[in-house]
Length: 307
Length: 274
Image 1 (cartoon, rainbow over the protein chains, first blue to last red):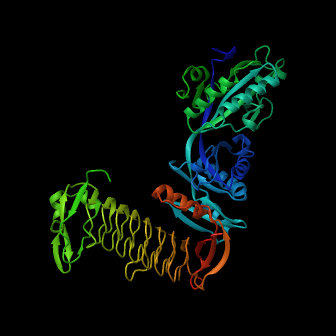
Image 2 (tube, rainbow over the protein chains, first blue to last red):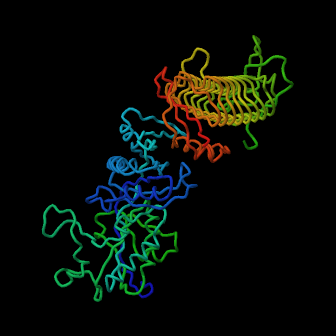
Image 3 (tube, chains in turn orange, green):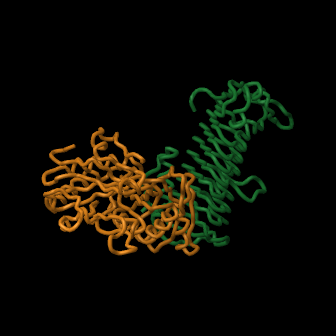
């Protein structure tokens, strides 16, 4: 398959089952909501070392938030619900509670699993905190020097998918970056999906384990490193001098497949030789996103498959 | 309520009021038309049947409509645990007393003791309500412990007295003693409150956008934008279609902590006009 002269490999992205939470942050204005969201999602590129993956899903209009203020929706992914509870308490406690004018709400009301967040953070109030039940949902009012921080007692956690990906093979670093930026722009704001790496782009794709260092969980994906073409078993076609990867986490397979489709289509441009995807031969992750299948389907109809 | 359900059409107003606690949608769901008409009601010391005062149409449905004014009928919806009850006019005392779930809608006024000791569900009156709205039954230590009460006009004395957890909203004025001895919960008054508001409150929240006399056992804390008031008012706009002015939603409030004669963990939040 070729799109605008770019070869689409007959391969698939292999993804894993994760747990996801949606955190809605509101503030006096969009700037402060975004400030808190950026802090909350900092150092959250990969579960390998960050314990969670997180990024802004989209900005919310005042009419879309529980308290009628501008907001930001953030998605957080962990490997299990217990870990999610810990990460949310740490991150909301250190980055949203501390940020002027913010309030923090659960964005997955229908999720079956719940983790305590406001219930844990309430103790910062040192006994002066108070709760309110509004519309059947409990919120905690934690007194702070500015006034009060309002946070929902529990947050929903649902099954989700992490590790969707596609890889851009380009003739130069500039061409790879331009294609990646176009892909990220095309995927920005799509519901139910995030790109957790810096600016949505990863330059350091990894393989599981190490060929040399025992105990190292992940090392450079040498098969895709142009500088190692002559000294390793390379996966790079001739003419490829730079590679960038887009990693996607989503609330479901459809969200990842739709975003992958939009991103790959945008990335097919001058200077790009091919688009491929990372997998482990189907042995590790149950969710497989076949690039050609996704691109052959009409927009909105594509979905990954569970092996 | 859509067409269908059980319809009770009042016959000529009786000489004396009746106690009709049998009118509860969740109980009607299991009864046929004749069985509903045969349910007992009390008129003073005399036992009668529901059919003596209402023409009954329909059965085995948890949607009940009363087709007219029944200010002489008390205790409707007592302890109801689900379904929907709509009164197309005014109703007597103690509507929704002790209800735990479901929805009651009164198109006219509600009498005294509406929603006393209710624990869940929604009670809405498009007119006014009498005394002790959402308060405690006589001699009881707790008033309403859950659910939501919305009154589009005014309410009488002792609204929310001894209430806990419930959310009560009165779009007009309330009489004396609003929120007296509240244990917890919220009372929102979009008008003014009479004398003695919030006295002996433990943890209750009393929001007043009009005038309210602050008891000497309350202490001024600050003037700020309480986020939970904004959330509550935004919720009330969307959930109950209340036309609440932006000034109140986005506004600053004077916070008074009290009642210091009690726990002192309650609050009166009075809208700061400027």
